[in-house]
Length: 128
Image (tube, rainbow, N blue to C red; front, top):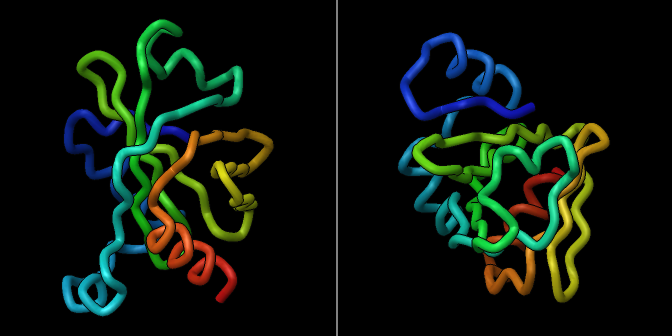
């Protein structure tokens, strides 16, 4: 599910926290070596979600945030900020030279993610 997170909204924050857990504390973040990825180029996204991205002739990027029970993919379209929630219970991760994330029948592909340590942390957290 995608939420418009351009502005603070307590109801949206509650739904996000309920789906993927509260944010890690600063101490947990430090122990983990960070909870956020670098920006990655989006190669492909589910047809339903293309409306949230820039036009085809622009490069669209996103970053991933780890949460205790899932991940949040953050991206922008024009002046709007969006957060795509993917609980670990429905998340499928494929990683080789590219990164494919799939949840609830929707997918996103990233080209050559160059976030190897972060992706390994994400995979480890999703399997525990």
